[in-house]
Length: 497
Image (cartoon, rainbow, N blue to C red; front, top):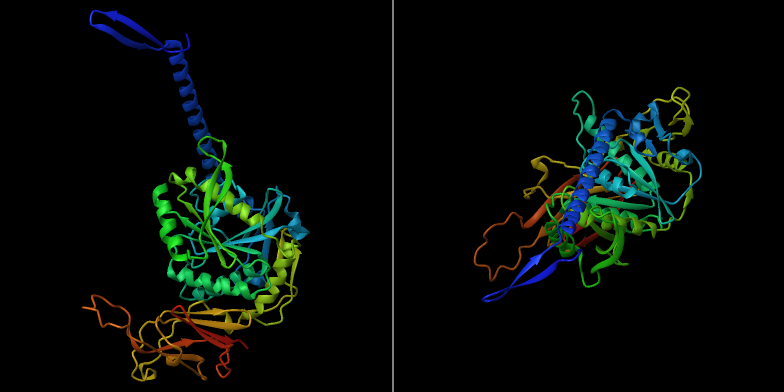
């Protein structure tokens, strides 16, 4: 008897009802549940053993075991030792030094933001969730998705800590290495994914300047994919709250609204392919396209992330590169030849890629043995801080104004935070002997007619003066190319020599 049977039992006071279930059916359901539970436990055990095996391999493994190719690029002066290009012997990537096709995608962002984790999720690298992958140089992996070819680049994060050595210029060398790496990545990539956590004002400014550089480039695709990795979210509710507060609140306008796209992905819990609507923020007029993911160790890993990864992959496949057939090794060589002169001397440096007889790996090095030294312009960082003597202040109150200096191919851009400043209050001049850019401006006090009391204020109003050290290759006697004031930021464009 497969169905429950309802029996009516007569009694003096009327009828009472009892519900009986066939014991064989009940035992069968219990047995099926136990089998499913046991199967999940076995799958979890196998997965944990697999992750443990990979972790043990990673301890002594070379990075190229997990990537298709790794370009061990270092500080600009280290080119004299040669930069190896090592490929995974098991991969098909002898093509790296031949003809490839597809879109080159660079995953960029600060140190420990989750770039390698996102890289692994997009390409399906079998690295365990939460594994700390310390990326060296530039790492490449090919991905074929829905018939489209992609080549993803993973790189060391910006501002990663270094070992300080007082007897060497370790800090300056690290600064030069990071800037050189950024130049090479920008040159070879067709599309960029910028990874952030809970985005900061500083990252918004960096994104602003990066998108400006992208607009002025000859690249066919002008949008940056911004992935908000909310890795501190503990549950799905907190994840959606962060999306609303961090992204929708800051970027959504009447012309830029949240969109949803139905996306299919495998549900990790049921192993079934499911379709779900995934939110993102984008518009044709917008220079950024925003996605988000949650903590891989929270319930978001199963409830949301797989569909968000699928949407990012699908969005990447819609981009068409201008040069979709290319030789990646040659593209790297050309980029290095273009940017090395900004960091080292001599400026004329012929670089080749050849196979090293001892290791059989490809190596990028100077064509002829040569002595290379650091150029004066290589000791740069996106941020320069100068504290001039009090005698230079001329009685004005110089507080720690926030400013950035960015280097582009033929100009520098200085950005100064100065909320409320007006055009008529802005004066710029330079000190020729030391290449000091002096910027004077006035921040007016807001209308306080109806204010009862100023509870707290850290802003300073009235006359301000900022001194900014400009690299030696800038001639302060040249005219300033452009000055704009936009959204509380002074932007000054200075031509390079």
